[in-house]
Image (cartoon, rainbow, N blue to C red; front, top):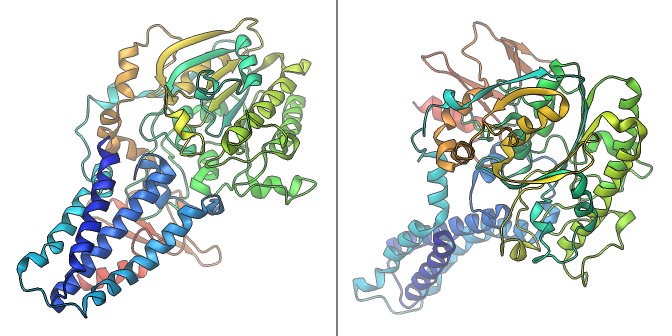
Length: 551
C-alpha cells in the first residue's frame, strides 16, 4: 500500500515545487539548483514507474537481474508505451530541466526567501520516491541471516527406486492457476481444467523472492534456490557458466543416464537461459535461432520468438525421436503465447476468444489452453508414452498484463500439474509451498528419491509446512544472499592468464571469458570480473580504467 502512495506523493511534490518556482524569477544559483533537483526527481520517478509497469512490483529482483543479464532477444516492441516513456525520460527530462528556469526570466525577482521553498520541496520528492527504497533494499539493506543456511540447504541427490521414467515438463509463460478460478474467469481454460481429474494438481504454490521471472522460475523449480544476480562485476553478459556450483533436476537426471533437451521459442541469450541449460549439462539447447529455420515459414513468429503451435509441432517430432532411442530422457519446453502485456494467439487458434473477445490477454490464455491441452493429449495418446510423466507448471505468476486487475482481485497461485500414466484418478493437493518445491516433488514420480536445495517434496509428510513457509519468506532468502552468491563460482586469482586473440577470450583455470573484460584481483586473491554492459546500467570499462588511473 505504501509503495502505491509514494509515487503519487512524489509527483505531487514535484508539481507543487514547479508551480511555486514558476511564480518568480530567481538568482542563477537557485535556477541551477532547481534544474538539477527537478531533473533528478522527474527522472527517478520515471524510472520507478517504468520498472513497476514491467515487473508489477517496482524495482525488484527481476529488474536488477535483467540489468545485469543479457537483454538480447527482448521484445521491446511489445512495450511501445514503456519504451517511449524510457526515451522521453532519458532525453526529454534533462532538456526540460534546463528550460524550466528560463521560463521565469521575465517575472519579477523574488523578494523573499520563501520563494526558494521549491529547492527544499524537491529533495522531499526524491526521498518519497520508492525507487530509492527498492534499490536500498536490493543492494544495501540485506537482512541478517534467519538461521544457518547449511542446516536448511540439502545437497542435490537422486537415488534410483526402480525403472527411470521419461519426463516432459512444460513451462507455461505466466499461465498461473488463478486463471482456473471460475468466479473471476467463468468458462476460461476448460481444456486444462478437463485434464485435472487425471492429474496430481497442487494449489498454494507461490513464487518466492528471486523466482518471479522466467529464468528465475526455472532455476527455482529445478535447483531449489532463488536466483540473485551476481554482485561481482557489472554485467552477466560475459559469464561463461551459469551457477556452476549448483546441480539441478536436469543435472541429477544427467548423472542417471538421461538425455536432456531444452526447447523454447525465445532467444537463448535473453536472461542467460541458454547458458543455464548448457551449464546443467543438457545435450541439446534449442532456442529461436535454432528452431525458426526448421519451420516452413521462418518468419512465423511473435516479437518474442516462435508461436506455441509451431513449438509444439517441433517438440512432438523431438519427443518421437527421443522415444525411438529407448533411453530415458527429459524434454523441457517453454511457451510464449501468453507473454505479457497482451499475449499472442497462434494462427491455428486465432479464432479462439474468451467471452466477448475484448481482452487480448484472456484471448491468448484461451488459445493457449487449447494448444497446451492438445499437445498433452497427443503425447498421452501415444502407446509408447506409458513410461512418460508430463508436468505442466507456470514459470511464475503473470506479470502486468491486460487481465491484471482481475488476477489481483483474488488469490493467486502458480500452476503445477503432474500427469502420471500409472495414475488413473488424480487428486488436488492443497499445500503451502513455492516453485522451489517442484524439483524434489517430481523426483519420486520419475523413479528416484532425493533432495534438491531449499525445495521440499510436497507429498512427503515429513516436510513440515512451517519449514516450507520459513524457506520462502523474503527475509529468509535475502538473508542468505551471500551464501547463494557462492554458487556463481567466481574463480580465485589465477597463476597465469591465457589470452586467445583469435577467439577473443581470456582463460584461467577451467574458465573462459570473452574480451573485452577487466579482471580485478583483491589482496585476498578473490577476483571481480567486469564486462562491457549491454545496457547502460553501469560504467563502461574505459571509465573503470580512468577511475583506476586516478587512484
